[in-house]
Image 1 (cartoon, protein in one colour):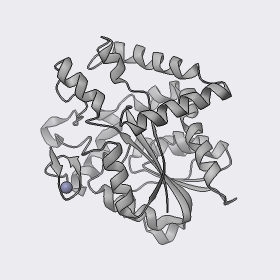
Image 2 (tube, protein in one colour):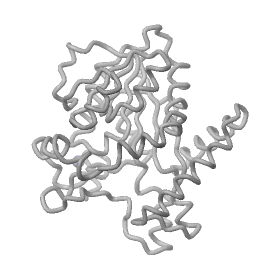
Image 3 (tube, rainbow, N blue to C red):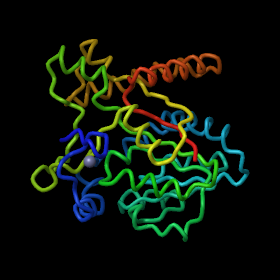
Length: 290
Ligand SMILES: [Zn+2]
């Protein structure tokens, strides 16, 4: 792990090759690293849709085009695009993993089964919005991914990226006070051959914003998600304990449910945007314009 002066964010070293990543995402990822991801998330689809609606609300405010074309890079099983399509967006996903791709197909989500760098940009046209959720931390060249995204956006188009907010101030408190190692570092479970292959890059609000700005984007809005570290600091150690983890996940959903009503929801969004300002929250969500 290095805090790389040339990339200006933390990443593993050495950086895995394309071939190593092909092997992981073509064969292993949804099978071994995240075997319960698809079915597990189908169970929480209502909550997922709530989080997707928050993004789509912002995007619909900023995108004037009636065509509403959206590209989801690393679209996984297609959860986000299913919601976007329900809201009348014209959707396209790019997803290399066969299991995730097949799940998208089952739901009739148009998807290209390739890695993003293999996609010929002339064949897919331009988009009003590009969504990159839980992907930039997995790729071996996030800057290239963002540059190519930039060229795929219409002028004034928007990108929304979401990455884990790592090495954040609350994690550091947990680390120091509770004596935890850097528990947010996630390496592949198959540590023999691909020890460094799950999260390659570690961003926080400041480094992910910087990467976007360097790529040419103008940042419009930063938002956070629930700071899960609060549970740890309250004495609920969910690390390596899926039973507690599930309970805390449900509590966090319950917390956010209380803000469903329109006026309360404004309070919730303001709160999470203020979290973003001080660099806390489990993930960093950045909206930026071309
Ligand atoms: Zn680097």
